[in-house]
Each structure stands twice: as structure tokens, then as C-alpha cells.
Amino acid sequence: MSTATLDRTAQTAFPVLDVLASRWSPRAFDAETPVDEGKLSSALEAARWSPSANNSQPWRFIVARRGSALHRGIHSALAGLNQAWAGNAAVLIVAIAETTREDGTPMTYATYDLGQSIAHLSVQAHHDGLIVHQMAGFAPEQIRELTGLDDRFVPITVIAVGELGDVDALPEPLAQRETAPRVRRPIDESVLLSA
Image 1 (tube, rainbow, N blue to C red):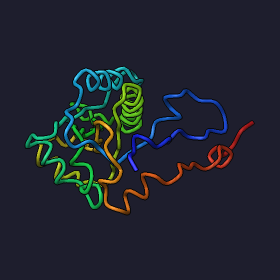
Image 2 (cartoon, one colour):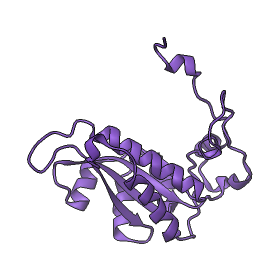
Image 3 (cartoon, rainbow, N blue to C red):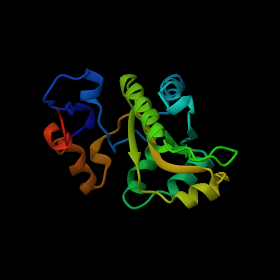
């Protein structure tokens, strides 16, 4: 079954923007098509304009295109099943939080603000027809060694970006996840108090 024929739109309890309901995190990436540089730039621009505490903008990105040594190095830092599919992505992006200023002052909200920037990036990319899958399973120290990151910059996630591929190209356990129903817990289980 081609992933492109799947309807993955969330069945929301309340109306949300179409781009939010239809956004999901595929693992089936087209292994041949290069990234559309304009769409990638728009996604990074959306991340750039996300909100941050005191406009500190504590996000940094390492952008590696498929075929480059950097892409291969980032791919090799991925853990477990992520290596089985993420190498097909046209781009691997390492999302980095600047957790300390140059003068040593801690940036308390850096990871929160980085998360907002990635949310903006993923929604813009999805709107433009790219797919995005974020991964926590990777070796941060391997990324640090590969890229020479200063200690005040912390790799938080690796993001695969590209065009949608065919689910049948995935190993069976991943193909099952790709087609499984999308679920979220009810809102009342997430809202702890409301007055």
C-alpha cells in the first residue's frame, strides 16, 4: 500500500486548522528526490520567527543533505530502528538548544523555545508538502564530536525532512506503525485543572 494513498488526517474532538489535523510523522521517505530548497528555506524561516523568551532565539540547526558526509555522520549517530529508515530522508537536521549564553548565564527556557521553533518548522514544511519526523533516539555526544559543538549548545533531536515515500519499502514492524490508527488521549486527561 502506498503511503501517499493513506488518509492520515486526525479525527479531532474539536476543530483545528487543516494543516494541524493532517500533519503526521511518516517514516517512509523517498530515497531519490532531493529536497526542494525553497520549501526547506521556508521551514527554517518559520522556525526563525517562532516566539522565544526575551527574544533570545536559543535554537540552532545543523542541516545535512543526503549524499553528504555530514548526512552520513548524523545518520550513523541514530539509534535502533531510526537507522532503518531515516537515511532515506533528503535532509537530516540536528536541532540544538543554546542552554548557556557566552557569558555563562543559563538560558532556562532554551529547550522549550527550541520545541516551539521545531513545531513551526514542521507545520510549515507539512503545509508545503514536505514530511517531517523528529527523533529522540540518537547519540548526542557522537553529534557533538562530528560537528565540534561548543558545550553550551546541546543537541536535542534529529529531524528527518523530505518527500513521502512508499510504506512497502519499510521493514514490517515500521510499516505496521505507518498504517496504524492515529490516537491521542482525550483533552480532559491532559488538562489537569480548569476553572
